[in-house]
Amino acid sequence: MNKELTAMIFDIQSYSVHDGPGCRTNVFFVGCPLQCRWCANPESWKLKKHLMFADRTCKWDQGCKACIDACPHGSITFDADGRPSVNWVICNECETIECVNSCAAGSLKQCVRILTVDDLMKILKRDFSNWGAEGGVTFSGGEPLLQHEYLDEVLQRCHQLQMQTAIETSGYARQDVFLKIFRNIDFAFIDVKNMDDELHKWGTGVSNELILSNISALVHSGWGGRLVLRQPTIHGYNDSTENAKKIIDFMNELGLYEINLLKFHRMGGTKWEQLGKTYEYADRGDMSDERMLELQELYLDNDIACYVGEDTPF
Figure 1: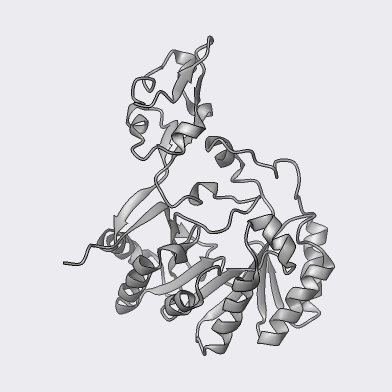
Figure 2 (figure 1 turned 180 degrees about the horizontal axis):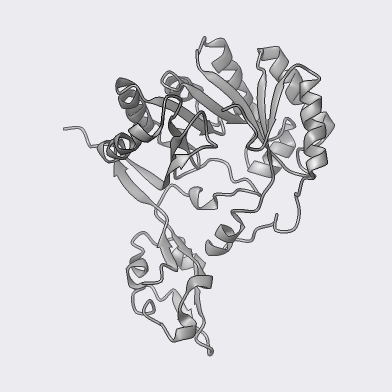
């Protein structure tokens, strides 16, 4: 008997209105081959169960130490004032994460849910009547293509039920996997973070060659869905006119005509702290509204529809 497919999911958001057409359910997969320095979802990087510790909600100041005996590895300690800390070297290797069951305040959180295909389909069927004519399900992450066997099965089931499907992807995957998954995708956002390969490597940890090749292969495959390129726009990294012109040339070569520029934000900053990571974009990267509009005009002047932030027709 074949083993039942499961996936690691770190969040499911119903009633999402910024991740594709209409009202949607957004499914966030764990695991990402990129490690962007500004990432808003750093809890999605590891393809495994892992811990987050929100010390701001911890009840240590009320004398709570319920978690100290719950960790079999001795990772949780308290200082002389009663304030807790965790040893991230130990916690990052832990597979069982027993400590979360001891914390009534929810300060210790296990990031990952394990769902079968049937589990996820039950949630999507529950939400189906709330989507409306244009809505559907969006697969995001992390990078959903890392768990492609599971995703492929879910996509096939979605189409059998006439559910509209969308994906938010870095585009960084084996090309055969990438094209196979897109056979059952109706709408796609693909990130183009920087056209300069060395800067792409610096910002994300990987080359952009495979991403650009996959976008080109998708266009030439005859895929009939709607593709919107997307750029998280970050001052000092990819907001130059030179980079925009390179994206415009790339899009014109392929006959692409839609891009969504997302203004840099720090909404994921606290997640870095909760994972024991240093967030180097805590005090840089901010984009002015004026510069965002200048970049938008540059695309519009080259006959490319450019949407800024959430001001989109989808």
